[in-house]
Every structure is written in C-alpha cells, then in structure tokens.
Image 1 (tube, helix red, strand yellow):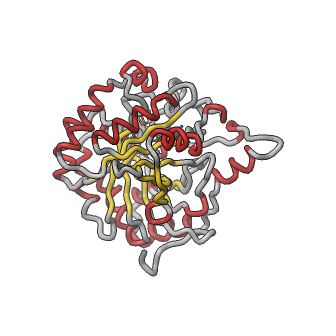
Image 2 (cartoon, protein in one colour):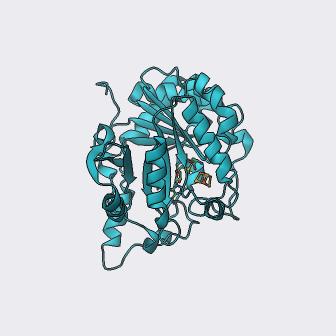
Image 3 (spheres, helix red, strand yellow):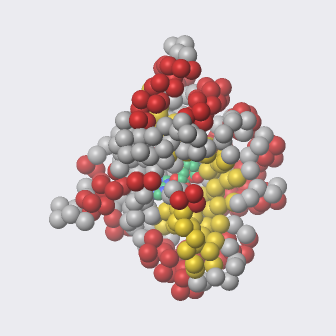
Length: 341
Ligand SMILES: C[S@@+](CC[C@H](N)C(=O)[O-])C[C@H]1O[C@@H](n2cnc3c(N)ncnc32)[C@H](O)[C@@H]1O
Ligand code: SF4
C-alpha cells in the first residue's frame, strides 16, 4: 500500500474497486434478481469502457490494488475483452478478476485471456441441472460448465466457484460442490445468504451460517484455517488437511467484516458506492460528462471516501441480536445487480 493511500473516517484504506459494467443479466437468480418491478438503467447512462478506464486509473492512484469486473452479468456487455485490455494496463493494479455466471464464457474466454484476464470467479449454486434451472430461472448448467472448463483449459488460475447457500434450497449441495471442486482443482467459496437489495424476500431463517457450513465440510473432509487473504478479504479461507485444495466462506451476516472493509463500488451508470448495502451512490458520471478534469474527479472521490462511515453488516448483526430483531425492509438498498456483487 502506498503512503498516499486514501483512508475513510474509520481509517480503512481504499484498496479494492468492484466495477459493474451492466445491470442486465440473462439469469434471474431468486436470491439476487427482482423479477418484475426493476427499471433498467438506460443505455445512454452506462459508462463507456474509456470512461471506466479513466476512473480506474484515478482509483489506482488513490490506493486501489485490485479490480473486479462484475454486474449484473458482465459477459452480456458487448466486447468486454476491450475493457479487460484497458484495465490490465492500469499501473498499481496487480489483480484483475471477473465474476460471472459463465453462461457466455465458453465463446469469450479466449479473447478475455488474450486481453490479460488471469482470474475468474464463477457462480454455481448446485450441480443438479433441474435445481440449477429452479434457482437461476433461465440458466443451463451444461453451458456454465462448458465455460468453466474452457477457462480451466486456457490455464486461468485460481478459478473460484461462488455458491450462495440457502437453507432448504441447496444446503444439501455443499458436499457435492466441495467434492467437485476438489476433483477438478477449483476453489469453492461459500457465501452466506444476504439481504441484498429489497426484493429477494430475505429472512434470517434461510441463512446457513459459516459455522454450520464449516462443520458439515469438516466432518467429511477435515479443514485447517488459513485466514483472510491480505488480512482483509471477505472470505476466510481453509485448506483440506489431506492437501487436496481449499475452500473459503464469506460470512457477511454472522461474522461481519466491516471494520476491515476496503471495497469501493462503481455502478454501471457511474456512481461511486461505498457499501454493498448503501441506499445511494455519488454521481461521477455527470462530472465526467460535464468535462471535469482528473483533479476534480479525484477530489470528489477523495471527499466521498474520506467521509465514509458505513458499517451496515455490523449494524445488522447488532439488530439481529437485539430484542427488537432485524427488519430487512427497514432500509431501502440499491439492488445487487445495479451496484455490482
Ligand atoms: C450479483 S452477482 C454478479 C456477477 C455474475 N452475474 C455472477 O452471478 O457471478 C455476484 C455474486 O453475488 C452473489 N449474490 C447475489 N445475491 C446474493 C445474496 N442475496 N446473498 C449472497 N450472495 C449473493 C452471486 O451469487 C454472485 O456470486
Ligand atoms: S447472481 Fe449473477 S447471474 Fe444471478 S441474477 Fe444476479 S447478476 Fe444474474
């Protein structure tokens, strides 16, 4: 981390930037995507690749070392490899990653890899085709696996598989996913089901906690804790004691990590968002399109980040443990597809 790294009101540095390149998606995962009442961002409002790259250089100058391209589904954005090419040249950014549902990956992975992409996370919540369809509404598991293995064949590494675990839906998929990942050389990342957005009808009873996920895996395949990557990553990582691979668990609900959160988000329409559970963003696009200089943009980003006081997941856990309990609908949040997961 450079000496000039920008810090927020709780002294948290800005180190990661998650860029949503589109709010659109070809899936409708039940835990993520509101089905009916969503108003899509108008295409004219979406940042161009050049606008995104310009901002990425500024964020890197302020301390960002890692960039993740996400969405919505990033691969529905035309010619995404062009953006990868622009971002892989950003000085100071050592890690460029893509999070995708992989349904369009098989046909794009060669261009993406040639443009400099080295790492991907693929979301797969079950290996049972009918259940995959039930969760994603529109997804075809075979296409996703085709994309996943095409990336493996091209040598992308590590390839992580993200699975959101929802009680009664896919908690019985934990062990099959672990076995698949161990056999094929992928890293599993289990994600506690979160109350993102406003439309996923989250209730705390559907969470399978990190503790329970680990107990289930450890009973079959013993684990040893490795810790958080760089001390601040959302995932707590574990390796199998038999040496066959690793897993991670992202426990935003039961073990929030707000105190070490270094992530900024850029929405597809150019808003800077400082927390996954924010109810608003700070408009960088209008400033860019009104002809602002780099200095003016850096000033706005710095001013937003230096005032940052978000600790939503800490507050949610405090509320869950209080006599009144936690009311998910008590606060309006930006949808996950808009701000980038
Ligand atoms: C919003 S998606 C965007 C990228 C891409 N479409 C994908 O599915 O990988 C990013 C990640 O957020 C996760 N996610 C979405 N809704 C969630 C929820 N309610 N709780 C936990 N994780 C969620 C997804 O499973 C996915 O791994
Ligand atoms: S999790 Fe990803 S693939 Fe599923 S609906 Fe959300 S954005 Fe689309």
